[in-house]
Amino acid sequence: MMARTAQVATEPRRALPRGVRHLPGWLAAPEAARLLERCETELAFAAHPVRLFGREHLTPRETVFLAPAGVRYRYSGHEHRGTGMPAWLDALRRRLGAETGVELASVLATRYRCGADRVGWHADDERELGPEPVLVVLSLGSSRDLDFRARRPAPGRRRRWRVALSAGDLLVMEAGTQSRLEHAVPPRAGRGVRVSLSFRPHRARP
Image (cartoon, rainbow, N blue to C red):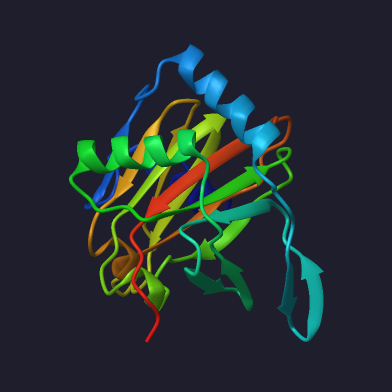
């Protein structure tokens, strides 16, 4: 069992799965540091209650959803409502949209306060994002691992991938990724604050 665990642990360091692109150092360190400071001082991060196995818990991370007024986004039993976004964040949204060729409408900002904060296996496949959404994620602050696994692995295969995201790194999950893969941020001892800005498309709810 130990040998198998070690083998799985080394496999994520190979090439990323199809549809996932990692752009290290997309933002220079000074600009990434300034952007992290603005997120820390100007965004209203909060932990939200979720219900698991009949009991209510606060998420082990803090989030804030930013989008045009009236836009709603529901996941994990909690509905977020857009009230607009600050000009500096909207400028970043437009910049990323121009560079990736994707029409990005909203951002889910997630704050990991320390290494114990985490997010479990999931796919961003909510209907508000459309059938095959493209997600563009900018990482700020402390380096953290992002893990991927197949949602429907082939029989006898448990392949996983891992990428370490550092301050200023950009990650693009292209169309089709959410239907094929799940991703997670595992806990890591000794890590400081990390903010993930996940820019995404958005469509009106029917």
